Length: 140
Image (cartoon, rainbow, N blue to C red; front, top):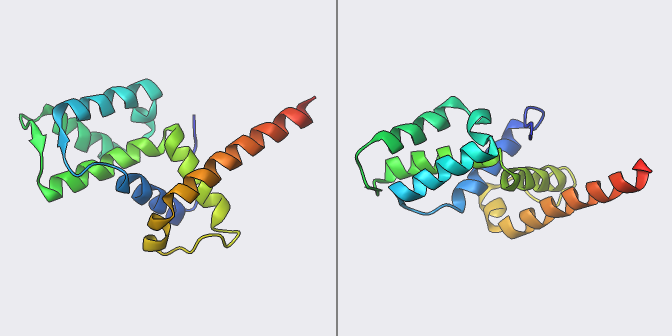
């Protein structure tokens, strides 16, 4: 559905970090199963990198009920963020970053970007709604 191959790698990395920052600090089995099912339904499971799918798949196949270890949780958060990048939320974050950075509305500092997550989501929604609006006008 969404192709991110033309997006700058630094913008993609910032988007993954934003999505990662909005995830919880520990995961249990039901929450990972919900992530897996949602990724399958949306199709993001097959578009995401193999490493992200592998980390989530291994966590689902383990006998651990709650993941609390900082390294494991960090790997799971990164994998889920990569899966979420290929959903509508990820596309909104990418659109907001791609709109704001070239226009000078955001600095590329990670701390600054993470402090402006709501603004980035607002810009992404605004960009998507504006393009749809103009598409309908010029189509007829």
